[in-house]
Image (cartoon, rainbow, N blue to C red):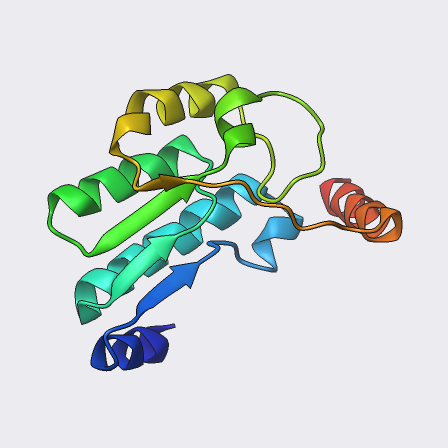
Length: 140
């Protein structure tokens, strides 16, 4: 990602990150998003490369983005309607639907977002079942 940020800066481009660690997400979706968000923010500050964080959903990520923007980091982000409206349910979306606190934080910070977006990435019933079985296996 660091090399991509440097190259994007040289070419006056923006990196779009769906902040998710593919290994950690199998164990903890919140941790996965938060770790990758922090990494990408750090790299944006380090390289000066522009960063857009897609589908932000946790209060921790939201707060880190706000802090980085106040420090002058070239970062934008967006949140999806279902992460503003829904909480504490088992709908199969990525990133996962979060807790009520996350939704409150999204609402509180809503005016500062650069965009809101609707994202649809359909998964087959087999893909959903496999991911659910892997998650259950990791949690046991």
